[in-house]
Image 1: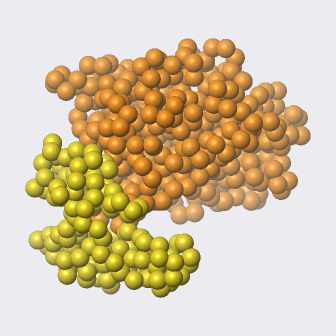
Image 2: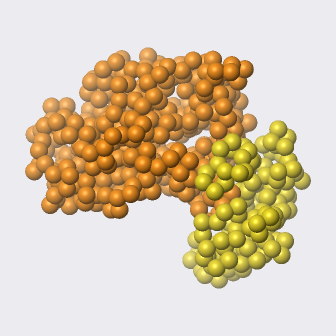
Image 3: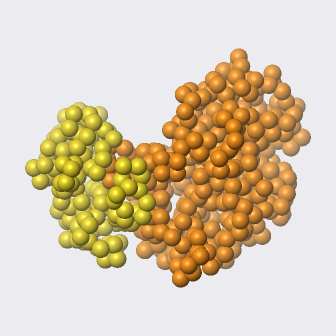
Length: 137
Length: 393
């Protein structure tokens, strides 16, 4: 339990990576790394796809990355109707890690550019849901 | 070039909005046409494979239900799913069943009745074809995913909104000639002009993609009948052989994807396998169907299939090289953009188009020059699955 608090609306209640939500509440955006082979994952995984180990530990995601791509959605799926327009994008951190999230509302869509420096921070919605978002570095 | 498994019959329903019938009746339309095309009866069929995206179906486990309705019991039947590429995957499975020697003739039916749910529900369900644990909580939909590929691609390769518009103008040109297409109206450049108050294609959906960049939902069915060499020669005057097959998969989460500006990795990987198996190169392909669920997807497919160098797909559109009279005609049946995209039926419909082209029976859509080799590129999800199938005479 607990993962239903993730995102604007969660479709998953139970996952072994549920601690991700607790970490967000503590102000941290973390991925997992395999204790056996060192493979790093974001979004976090409970099991290692590289060496099949189940021994994972949490690590804090890098602070600086570049925006690889983005889109502004003018329509939304069920449950998100109040939100459009909203911008989402993919951050590329050097070293193989990437992250997908919404871009913070305070960043105007017309100011968003491919390749711009960005950072990531946790986010709490008024209804108690928790997430993370991208903003200009 | 192996000639072990042939297509001996093809069929497709009209692609429509709001089909007036149930899924079994929809499946019957394509099946009947393909059986008449093949000139066989149900007792000649050894097994059947049914393909759809299950989130649209109210019927659970549809294979048994549809097999019964089509008169295909008690032969074995089962269900195959890879979202938008389900029926291409079904044909790959059917090919394997025949190649293994297990069966002589296999029927592959793709179907989808998308109109049972609203467009918003449909978008949510398609969004759930992506990563529901880590991405759907942000409010993702199919157009947004492809829009992210478009944004990165356009920034790197100088592809413009006018180029994307011109992909749609090409599809619409052929949509008007395809009596089975859901969108048969022509489209003009002015329909994309943001300064034109009546421009119905210009509104943003997920920027940089506009209404006109997105394919149309539709209800439809397709049917491909496969046979081994012996049966193909016995039943068919014009067998079309499957000479190359490739398929690949990719990480569902955008955070685990390679460079976005390079397009969908499954397209390249599936193409490489299919060309190798067929012993041909891109230059040998004379007509192709590619997965243009969005305009950007067609441009990326040109490069994944080797029709254009990396980053240069725009030239094919600018030079009209993918028109019927061009160097490599692509989607001359209207494509997903105008013919429509009834998820589970799409791959089989693309294959029908290519088979008809190779038989010289494509009517007003026929490309000149008596094409001998044709290719089908079909993608499931946002490049989650990719399938390339090459056909020869």
